Length: 246
Length: 391
Image (tube, rainbow over all chains, first blue to last red; front, side, top):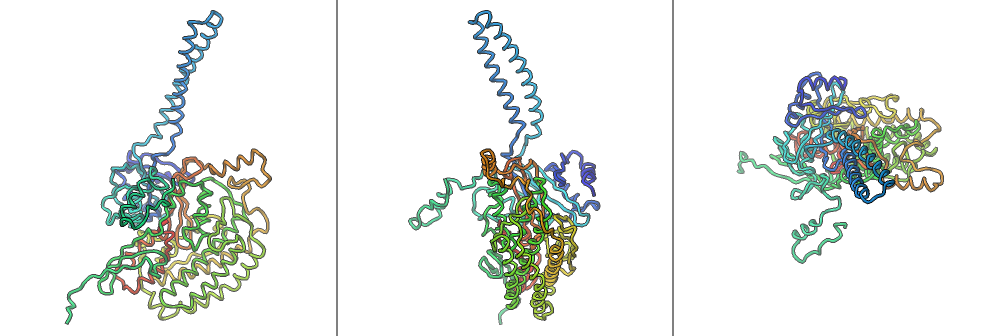
């Protein structure tokens, strides 16, 4: 089945729960609503013309520090407006003290600046509206890469997930999601319900924090050494200074 | 008399230093007599946080680390990673480089399968094939040493081509290898395939059926051992595989013996691919795309070029914002890279889909209800490497 046919079928079945779809270098990506996620996955698995029976992988992405170029541009435009307004104030102060010849050129400059400010404000508003697409309500995305071995087509399903949301486990649809969901729980702290055995699989069971989040430091936290220290019998080993880089 | 009606479940800890787990894997077995009732795989002993490291490195800096995923098939890992980056950047590869890539990828596949065959035979109790297979693998490693100087961690395939051209000596070694290897392979084949002990240890052991194999996400020879005709070289063709003539072996039984036969046939098909490549490879031409942004300028750098080179080293090559998934058919199964780029020189997020990770967690469903003596042969037949499981 072709990509646009798949999207059309999904949109016809679920309507507004299918938010957006994009095709990036041949990969079809569909964004869906979290509340309908499990239903959509079940539909993708069971619909005879789609039949996505194989799940290569499932993962999560932390979008908390993803760059927002348009919001940045809008902010820069607004800053420009502010500096120009200040300049107008300065010029007006000068006007009161200036002689006739200077006064005329100053008046012209003020007129020019005012026109520029109006233009910049319009542009900033436009950019702000465009930047609304970049804004996200929730921190994470869960990603399901699906494949149909029978029909030989692929799709990627994404859904926005917040820290407090609990995602319904897909182990009843594809058994292979079991280990991936454990990994996501371990590395991002996203919880799944109806999972048979949700546990940390890569990090130790008593580990604090979720390493693949963007706020988790690469080189260890200051508190880590103390954590190690409390676990050692007193006086047996020195504080391991080499375990953490500055 | 001891009451037979009173049965107790026994828990046995297998690993992490057990020789049959092929690395530092640990399995907690729940036994009812000799029958395995449950297996709980525990991994993470080799966890290095590669996906986190990748987010803090430029694309070319991550290249050597890819070798450490599946450390017995480093060439194939390199190739999969480079193909993913090339898909993201939309780069092209010269024809000669494409042939060199297929040559080394198929040699890597043979080397990986030889290690699997030797260690599996050793685990089950046959010692001789181990020496035969490691002897043949040695000649392949000699060839790799000839083209890139390294024997285990090659870092040979690069974005846009390969790091250096193959030598005439390599081609001579390869031709000699192709002449002798099929005969040598018959030695271990003759020792095992029709061996009665081997067949009784592997036939109808560790069975996983067609639907379960797909649902549990098995890939590579394990998937084909369950009767699924699926190979990314045919179904999602990359490189010059579409122009080559080869078959995909698959068997419907789904037991250890089927997986064994599929891998043996894959070795033969790899030899077939190698023979075609030796015939078809263009005698001259670029081995590296000269317009690749990852290539340093060859001329003596002027001031401006030196600065450009410096910026390239520090900030990396800027990839377009977007996301891409590429899966390649590795000896162990599907190795995939899912890269999310935000337009900078570093990936925003990289997920590495490794076949072994999925296989380890599919082990419980395969061995449940079987005998404890069989778990060793099932583990060997799934052929996982813990560098890939823990990442």
